[in-house]
Length: 406
Image (cartoon, rainbow, N blue to C red):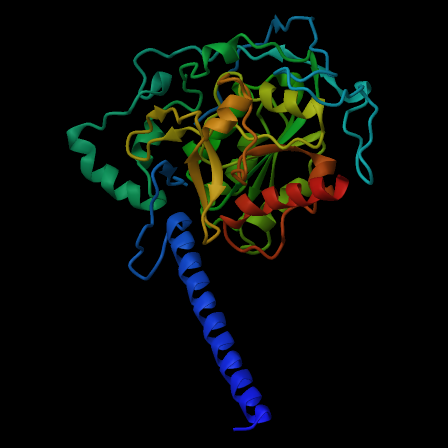
C-alpha cells in the first residue's frame, strides 16, 4: 500500500465519520427541540394531547328609562400628568409636548381635554329580576319557552328580556381602585359597538350601561354598526329608539355581511372623539369603568388600555367577576389565551393589585386607544374575516411600532 493510497483511505474514513457525527448531532437537536415544544406547547397531535397547561383559562369568548342627572363634581385636585399613577419611573411628559419620532404627540393639548363629573350610581329596583347582577330564576312553567328562545342567540333570551335595560350592578372594583383619583380633565371617547342579529335587550342594555356609568362630558357618542342583520326590530325601530337617547347615538349599516373587523373599521371611520373605545354588543359596563382607561391614555397617547373582562352567565345572566391575576397570552397555534400573571409582573407592580398589567397580548374586542394612534399603527387588518385574530394583531402592531420608535 502506497502512502497516497493510505492517505485517500484515511480521508474517506474521516469524511464518513464526520457525516455520522453531523447526523447524530442533528438527531440529538431534533429530540431536544421536540422535548422543548412538548414542554411549552398547548396542543400536540390530532388527539389534542397537552391541550391545557396549569394556569390557563379559556376565553369565553321597551321604552327608554329616565337617567338621573349627574350632579357630583369630581375633585379639582388634578393628577400631575408628568408622573405615573403608580410611581413608575420614566421620562417626564409635559402636557401638549413630547413627540415620539415619526408619530403623534405623546400628550394632548390641554384645550381638547374635558372637565368631567362622576356618573351617578344606578339605584337598585328592588323586586325586579337580575338587579344587582343577581341570577334570574325562570318559573317552572316557562322552562319550555326558555329553551325555545335560547336557540335564537345561544343564551337565555327569556332571562334577558325579564331584566331592566338599566339594571343595577354591585360595585365590583377593588377597594384600592375606588380610592384612586384621576386627572380632572380627560379626553373624550367614542364607543363603537358592532352587532349582527343581536337580541334587542342585550344590545340596548349594553348601550344603557355605557350611558348610565360614564361621565357624560367624556362620552362623545355611541356608534352602533349593524353588520347586515336580518331581524326587523334592528332596522327602523332601533334607529328611532336610539335617536331619543340622552347621548348622541346612531346606527351605521354595512351593505352586505362584512365580518367583525371590517364592521369595526367602518365605525372607527366615523369617530369624532379623541379616543376610540371598542365594546362587544352584549356586555355591561360597571361603576367607574371608563375613567381608568382614559387616565392612562391622557398620560401617554401611545398607551392601549384594556379593562378586566368579567362574565355574564349565558344561563342566568348573573354578573360574575373575573380574576384580576390573569393576562393575555397565546399558544404555539397563535390562539389567544388567559394565563396567570407570573410572579415577576406582580413584583414589578409591588404586589399592588390596582396597578395596570403590562400584558404580552390583549383582548382585541374591548379596549380604548387614541384615534390617531389607532391609525398610526395600521388599525385592523381588513383581510380578517372572523373574530379572534385581532387579539394578537393589535398587540403585535403596538410592539412593532415601539421597536421602530426606539
